[in-house]
Image (cartoon, rainbow over all chains, first blue to last red; front, side, top):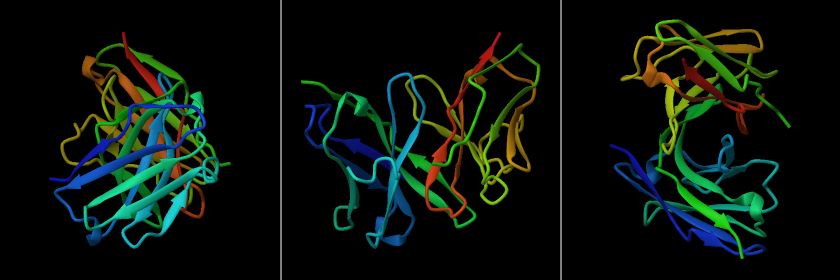
Length: 121
Length: 108
């Protein structure tokens, strides 16, 4: 059974970098699939942040691309998110998920439970 | 940027049929997916590839597609179906994932 678990600071200061890690169990990242991050501001909708393949190739939401870096550590079976120059608008629940499908459509089949990150001084 | 449009809210009485639409220009080229999200929980996939139902999802959930609009239909709505529903697809190249704004389903 595939399980994902987010971890990282729950409070980040404005202008600093938000860093989160997603630990995967029940499946080896090296075996395939894209692995992604999604966020949800309090009371608002879902926003896809980006995805990474085990080889390291990445796709980012164009609206966040200048501030986002997603990396993968296959030896630890985990992947990470860094979001720079954060503001209060980046306050959200951040989810990690396994991206499944093919060129005709990708979806998020397995999700972590989510972690709330608040940007505040 | 590419957008998917959903109605903000839909209300139905128990036992009735709820229909939630999602519109987007690339939907004829890219499959749509539907997620159910209850308060404090992660989203759960309820429909994939426009109309397929994952194992464990009740048969009352179904999906359909027509041109630039996809529809999630919940037949015989139950109180437990009250939740936010999100459609998700990708841009025409299949590179970027996009979510609709979400629809709050209220069971009266």
